[in-house]
Length: 295
Image 1 (cartoon, rainbow, N blue to C red):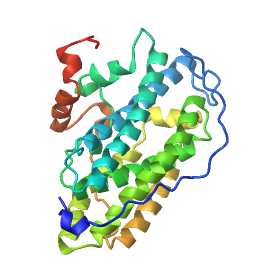
Image 2 (image 1 turned 135 degrees about the vertical axis):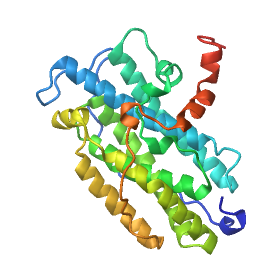
Image 3 (image 1 turned 90 degrees about the horizontal axis):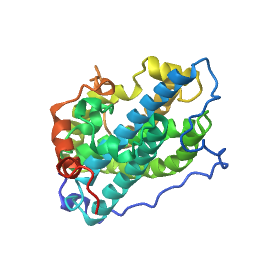
Image 4 (image 1 turned 90 degrees about the vertical axis):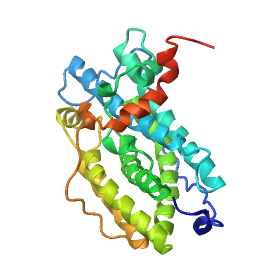
């Protein structure tokens, strides 16, 4: 972890909120799924693909939010003790939206808690990067920067797409992610262009995280069908925006060009590392130990 001596006295910047978009169209009524989306998908297949998308987005945000929450009380300075859990709450808000929407689609009396607390590891569909242990502060900050640099253009493009529920949430999410990029990006620059120790740690974080970034942009039959239907952004467009954000920040941080030689894969298909089991043992303990308990 970067020492407090190296980072003491560095102030936090206020979020740079984007311009307020126009109000979205109202979302579907509870229990309904958008039935008139563009494209040629049959209704049931479209609902299944939308459900799979919600699980992917929700799981990404739930697991990374849990990882960020682990820094509470352990960050290298007081402001980060507040900033990291605050970003975790933003991520958990998106996870709750996805799981609540998924419960309406799937029916059967499911709730958002069922998805978060009552699934085994192989049922989760998040990318592998978000489940990796936090490591030091440089690792956590660079992981957060990569994720935010992807999700910001993702949600930005979502604001104009066909699903009204996701488009409405996207207008909120782009403002949150604008702050996440700014906050984590400033730290990438401070550590990358800082002391020899902070530069070394940021370089090690880059080497460790680079192979996990490519999974963000993976496509399969589900993502292709939803892109064709106007529900999901074009991943090539999102990746170009991601690359531009990363390149600009890395130049200021004097970090080498980001050019991973390979990408880990499998998270979207339920193949995870051993780290997920340990994470879920902590995350799901209360519901597993006392199923259905209320206080």
